[in-house]
Image (cartoon, rainbow, N blue to C red; front, side, top):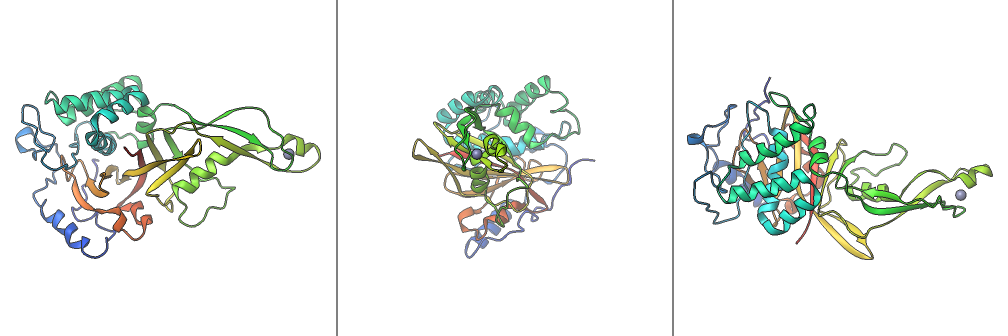
Length: 341
Ligand SMILES: [Zn+2]
C-alpha cells in the first residue's frame, strides 16, 4: 500500500485570522493544476521548479521555496519532508549553511555540496536527495530501506546530525551541596522530546519548557543525604559555550506547543533559534511546513504539491501555536529550529 494521497484542501484544518484567510485561499486556487497522481511525474510533466531542472536556466525572481518530488518506487517522503526544510534554509544563506552543514555532519555536509550542484544545474533536486539517501542506505540498509518502505524522521535526524554535545552539566544536591564531581554532556542537535512522567508539565507544555527541564534535570538522588535517610533529588547546573545552529526535535506528545524562538544562555548572552519547519506524519506519509525568514509558512507534500510549496500564512497570525500540531490528517512528528543570521 502506498501512502494515501490527501485531498488538496485537507491541510487547511487550522485557520488563520482575518484577511489572511483570503490570501491563503488564493494560494490554493493558484495551484489548482497541482498534480495529485501517485506516480512520480516524468520530466516533461514536471511543474517548473524555481530552483530549475538540469540544463534549464536558474530563475528565482522571488524567493519561493522549492520542494522534493516524491519517489513512488523508492518511497522518499521522509527525506522529502526533511530535506525541503533544510534545502530552503540553505537557499536563504548558502555560504553560511554550507559551512554549518559541513560542521554538523558528513551526510548533511554532502547535502550542502549537492544543493550547490543543483544551483549549478548539474543535478536535479531529487538527484541531490538520492545521493545522500544512497549514503545513508549503504551504512544502515535496515534503517534507510529502498522500495515501498518508509523510514522515520528521528532516524534521518540522527543520521544527519550525529552527536555533537553542547552544554556541560554538573550536578549537585540542593539540600547538602553534594556534587559527584562529574561533567555531563547535555544537549545534542537531534533530540527526542519525551516527557518525564515524574514531572508535572503545564497544559500545552512548550519545547522551551521541556528543554529547561532537560538541562536542569539531575541524574538520580543524593548519596550523602541517603545515608542520613533523606531523599533529595540532584539538580543539574548547565553551562553553554555554544549552541548548535540547527536542531531537530522529534516529538511524540500531542499537547506540545512550539515556541517561535527557543533561547539558550551562552555565557550570559541569549542565543536564539527560530522555528523554521515542522514535519507531519500519518497514513504512512510525511509532509512538511517550511517557515521562511519573513515568517511566512509554506506547505509541501512530495505527492500533491511535488516540486512546489504552497504559501500559507505567517505563523504569527495564528492565534494558538498549539494548532501547528496538526496539518490536515497528519500530526507533527518533528520540529526544526535554526539560528538566525
Ligand atoms: Zn544531599
